[in-house]
Length: 252
Image 1 (cartoon, one colour):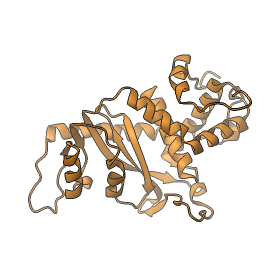
Image 2 (tube, rainbow, N blue to C red):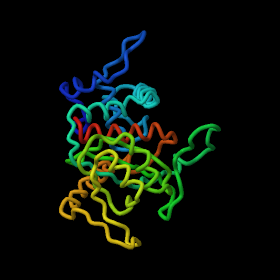
Image 3 (cartoon, rainbow, N blue to C red):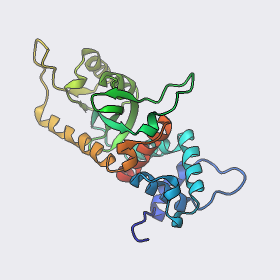
């Protein structure tokens, strides 16, 4: 089929250093299996609907589930992002991802973090918090339930922020503690103040316009159907789908 997706040998060469070591039986054709995994995630298909050119669908699913649980796809994205840092001006924002009924069904295992799905005005959602580099490529992700405040995502991402000169964010991130934390990291915030502030906050309006790059990044991620709609019950597996999409779109 001419519309199938295939990783190039050059792309595979960049990915292989991040693959886990194979133990026992040699791993089957990595290029074929990974290309199939990407095709399924991009088009939002069931695993059993994978084209036969990619081999048995059980092989695709087993590789996907095993590597997701190991955090391989997340490590690939952060590893490739670290190879070519461009962090003079970083941006932070969050977006809602619709949860399908299959993702929020059944009970939650005791002792777990939960499914990270919450009810908002738009229904059942997961919220994706992200940090992007100067040209709008994602470098960090954090996931919460849909009703969770942007402050929670900002606090979680704060410790992993790279060295930067500026951070762009909308007024949802206007908090004194966040500004002070950025100052401690020697990062200048470009964040407009909330309307409830007594004194207006000064910020670089011309620089702030570049915040649209993170909005464009979210839009491109949502072109992948398995990202725009969450089908996976496991938050770790869903985050792997997001990391895989980011890797293919922005880092390969």
